[in-house]
Amino acid sequence: MTFTTGKFNAAVTPLYDNHGRPLTYLRLAVTDRCNLRCFYCMPEEGIRYLPKKDLLTFEEIERLITLLASLGVSKIRLTGGEPFVRHDLMDLMQRITEIPGIKDLHLTTNGVLTAPHVGALKKMGIASVNLSLDTLDRERFRVITRRDEFEPVMNTLNLLLEHDIAVKINAVVMEGKNIDDIVPLIELTRNQRVEVRFIEEMPFNGEGNHYPTLHWTYTRILDYIKSHYPNLVKLPDPQHSTAYTYSIPGHLGNLGIIAAFSRTFCGTCNRLRITAQGTLKTCLYDDGALDLRALLRADHSDDYIKQQLHTAFQHRAKDGFEAEQRRKNHLPVSESMSTIGG
Ligand code: SAM
Image 1 (cartoon, protein in one colour):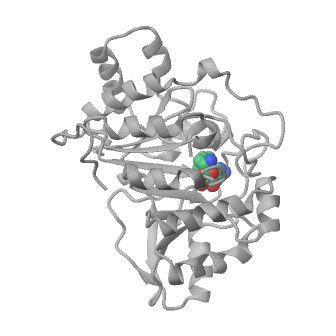
Image 2 (image 1 turned 135 degrees about the vertical axis):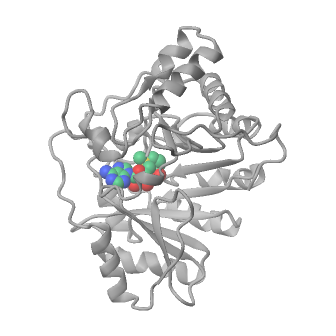
């Protein structure tokens, strides 16, 4: 959906990075806090959340998005942590829809607190909601997320579908945890217009002490799906998509596989990230390209900040492997996705 209610005006020609990729999509973490404790994302205890003063304020977020929109960013995804843990999230979202140049606003949520807002999301013209759901089994949900919140999440899913909001379900595929859920999750696509995406597990688990072996690569996930659905059809992948997309004849929805750890999609990556504390990342695997919060709080002009952004865009790593190698401490990635903004 393209916003027509706001001050949306003519599209800005996007900026290109040093590898000729346009930068048009921002994923912004509004908080590092989460109400679940998915074991692949966060440790159960001992998490040190950012003090509130370290989070970007809504005014700072609005200013940054306005600046980025003037440089050609037109698609925004709010994520976290869990975005709905941040008070007044809906106000921020409404304000973002009114920023000139922003065409699409998306949201990634775990669905625990989302249901009461589904009507308002629809009214605001949300382009899509990504719902994280690794299993359809209540007990497995409790084990994976370390919280007993399966019912509110399913309620959110049903409401999103009832309101005809585009929904993508994100399921991380994990050996010994949810392999038996792959087929039931795909079965959701039989009668519902939903896209179910299976994601390779990445080492962003906040643990710092182990780099998991990837048992379920995208090719293994694909082989497994094909063994259950031999008539799987490959669909053309949308431009800049991170997912390989497929359909099953007769199913209303479709499915995708995201090679998040194998990093096969970097060549067309159009994404920027801003963490909850205002660090710009030009690759998920880098350790920060620019401290935007410091720039904002030092009272620099819009032009100065845009110049700094421009410079960061011109030093972007070619792919996630180069970004990881360039990290200052040369240690492998281990931070939690909740601090980065997944
Ligand atoms: N709280 C929101 C949610 O649950 O959707 C947004 C933040 S969450 C960090 C965003 C996405 O990152 C989720 O779909 C989650 O499954 C994914 N994620 C987190 N840790 C991951 C990991 N180690 N490997 C792959 N995906 C991960």
